[in-house]
Image (cartoon, rainbow, N blue to C red; front, side, top):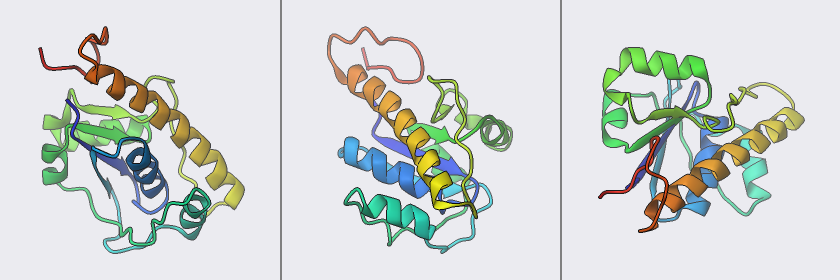
Length: 160
């Protein structure tokens, strides 16, 4: 059963805070965390990310960027990244993540681009992709909790 999810991107100020907030709203019992491969520790969420989440009634102003560390990877049940290159990087540097490391857009076969230093419109487009990926994962995680789940393959499995 998935009890903790780690979301990873590059800087941990644009995509991750939006993805964590979106997941937290849809899966309130799951522990959420985030980190960046090249994050500046202590950096706040991007103003466009804050604004877009605020429009949904979610406050992410307390978010602070943190650098990805081995203990993040070890403690998470599921690790979601934004693109194939991030997945390859983490698999190479943190080999114990294999089997629990996937793209947020894994099932839709898409990457989520980095909107850093782009327009608000690009952040909105990015958030649309995040929503799509979160919805796909939430559906799978919720289905895996069902005692009669037919979902017995892939990263999310029930304990038999």
